[in-house]
Amino acid sequence: MSKTKQPIDEKTGQEAVDQTPQLDFTGKLDIDLDRVRTEFGHQSDLNFRTFCLGNTNQQAAILFVNGISDRDLIDKHILKSLMGDLALTGHDHSPDLPAPSYTAQYIKNNILSVGILKEVDCLADLSTELLRGHTALFLDNSPEVIILGTRKEITRSAQEPPSEILVRGPQLGFNESICDNTTLLRQHGQNTNLTITQLRVGQRVTKELVIAYVEDIADEKLVQEVRERIERINLDDTGYIEQFIEDNFLSPFPQVQSTERLDRVISAIMEGRVAIMLDGTPFVLTVPTTFNMLLQSPEDYYERWILGTLVRLLRYFAAFISTFGPSLYISFISFHQGLIPTKLALSIADTRVGVPFPSLIEVLIMEVALEILREAGLRLPKPIGQTIGIVGGLVIGEAAVQAGIVSPIMVIVVAVTAISSFAIPQYNAGISLRVLRFIAMIFAAVFGLYGVVLFFLMLCSHLVKLKSFGVPYISPAAPYRPQDWKDYLVRAGRCCQNIRLTDRKGDRIRNHR
Image (cartoon, rainbow, N blue to C red; front, side, top):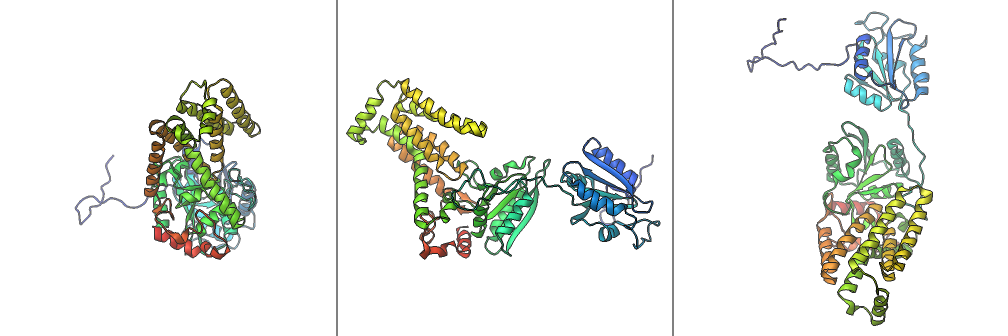
């Protein structure tokens, strides 16, 4: 066969490239449906339904996926409208089509009673919409494929977040539906400047992602930075967004706050932060994040300021004990016995008689056993998980003391350390401190108390250099901003309530950036 000669470009003298877009749909119903069957015919849950429009002979067809499309909406508002005798009366005939053919524009404007309508012209967009639960309408003599919003939402009701339980405060959290989550945010964060921007992430598994912020409070550079980092993500599994948008992936500290609580997210966006919601998960990410946010709880603001301050200071003390408790025990027992009071030193020495291991091995045995019990309690069914954790810890600790493997004082130190780690409101922050605990133990076993101080200084140096979306991680401690300490280590009372005003919070983030 002879090759068709392409026209010559007058400027370059070469064959011109045809820039006309090649559409996947021809407007011939039989040809278009055969092409769709060839592409998606192996999907057993994909339904093809052909019919005639009203009282005419014009052919049409709808495509939808069983289970994720609303069958009642399709039957009552789509098929009934398109197949009824009076559905197509009084229309304007198209002069380019043989009568009685009906255009997609007329059907959209006069017949279909569906809220979401749009058009696609390629198979890739068609497959995306079908997998989202929408219905595709094909018309004979029309190359336009109409997408009808028939997505069926299968969600659970908004309940108390199981990972962030409060004694006092709203018992309301997010669920797995991004539509429900944005609705909750609109209802409880009523603000005309609340902006919700929708994106799509992922290649093979494509999901909806929403960026929420208050327009007149959030920094525009921060919003743009969040959008750019999300758009750079190029992966099939969208569950790693938190790890791909953080500043320093080598740091053990979480630089993105993850929460299920609605009130925590509303408070964050009113402070000038940005919330990131992903379809399919109840956890919402807020950026930028500081270390003091991980040790604060919404309950601090539902109690009087004196009680809130005391509980907050207790959490900071618990975080310190959780990280440095076993390392201090190792350094005092192995290197600095003279710093222990005489009576206490004699009591500890008496309990360690017969223990065959040095203090580091003794601590490692108990800490590893405790971590295994903690992980086993999380993986077991809820009715028996807590029982295994409590009973297992008591049995193993008592058996280890009776066998002479560890000393009773060691069991007390490990128990206090474990209880302190449970006092941290954010689960991922607790994991970070648990990892640092083992590193501090190694420093203490090698250098003693000097090693603990050295590790503490290295940790402070890392925290000072760490940033979350341009905001210093330990602000307002560094850089030092004394006017912001009213809601840092303490929660100031009524005389300092203006610190909660949104304009002050927004200016704070802008200045830090």
